Image (cartoon, rainbow, N blue to C red; front, side):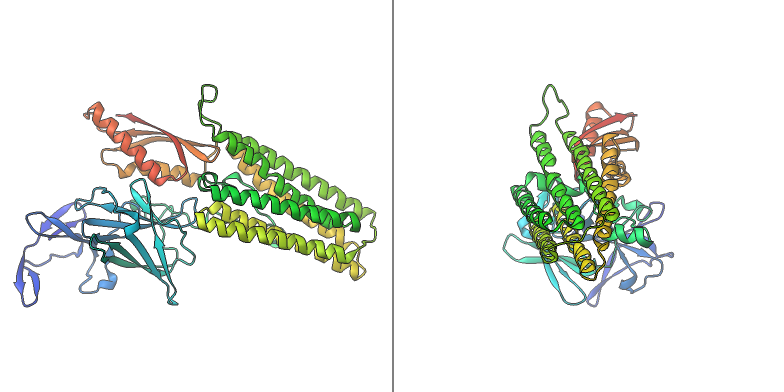
Length: 508
């Protein structure tokens, strides 16, 4: 057995046979703060265990901390080496990732994905089985990990003889994920709940929290939905469903003259219409690069984003104009029952689309499609708000109708604000700080990289294009430096899920 103390001080311990156990022949010097490596079969020096002991942890296993890998996850011992079990959630819903290492700690080829399963057991006894798929040099669970993240995880690997071997287990506490400023040594920076934004307080916060929902291109589409036939089919069916819902509402608008219902109907048409330029952008992007467009057609998505913002802003202007007009010149609302029915139609139609999108999104592992389903669900409840205008008219308060119309207009303006900010960032080659941090830290996992000199990145459609400069030992040959650069690119593709083209430059 070998211990390694802070500063790299090593000490080896030999063992003697005692009654039913082995005991070290020498005492352990103070302080008890070291990394332990236990090796079996002296001829092979096979690593059997790896853990950290921090200060006087005598016979108190609950205070010992498992050694963690380069991605921040605990290291578990299996038959052929080590496996790091981490949770990845940068820009996507949380998923399990398994990184396999040999006995020397170097990256190893994972076993077949179908041979690996992971079972989570929550405090209430609820169990869930996760399967895996091959991704680059690691395995990843297609199914996202539901909140809350409080469970015991048990990793099992099927052996050649068909037996399932329990590799190990660990307990995951709520939000036990490394964030910026924490766990920097692990270079693992997950970002739980990136989709949540500050909503503000008071009336503005209430409107934003209950009505605003972003039309950011990154939120609506990811590489999974684009490449999956199931996701495209869901997009088509959703478009038809929203269109039918809006058309039914138009018929009632013609009978009732409800401004609030008109505002909601215009919004539903805008939601359906924004899928069209995005669809065209996807078709262009599939053509790939050519002599005229050497970077491909990824920027077509940004052009589609401008169109989307314009359509949503136009719908807000029309709805607001009609509401103010009715506020100045109030007219009695007719066919109140029809208006109420149309509001219910809007709710049922949007909720059906929401349920379908969320179900398909979970099947294909698309966080964007799930977010679109949640977006449709919010639209459904917005349709129900029209009922307030109907109730007001029934109670003899006709101004309730234009007031609700103005409220929906404000909600649409919140959407315009969020969408315009996202599109503007894309147009001027902006990038999220957390993605840049992932790119900057990925090379640190590669042996031979002395420093990261510079990092640049930008979006092109739904892909991130990056330029990274690393420093290496000036005495290395060109062949070795080139091999390090290739390993850095491989590490970048492992850590940055939506990475497109990447250029790795080597300097001394």
